[in-house]
Length: 113
Image (cartoon, rainbow, N blue to C red):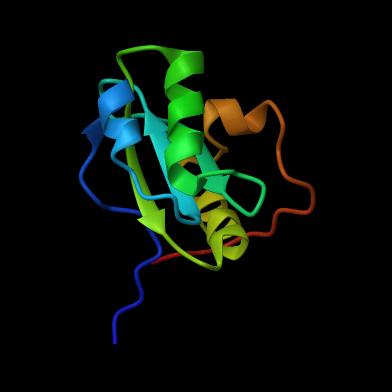
């Protein structure tokens, strides 16, 4: 059994249309610039009225065109969010730029292979 820690789904352009087509489910997502540099790792949790759809619609409204995203539907969104943040930190030496502005408290360390 292989354990996948990294979110490696294909990037999609962040537009109003692509955000509208997302499911209203819980999960995690990544936002990247046009070159694929991860800017933010977010979660669509119980306080997101329409889950991933509403979170990505908000991201598009705030960021405008030019970004891309990928999502993972996951009922354990909070644990998965922490895991993705720790993997990014291990891989790059820091959190994504927009997560670093308001880092989660007590983020652990992970040593993925």
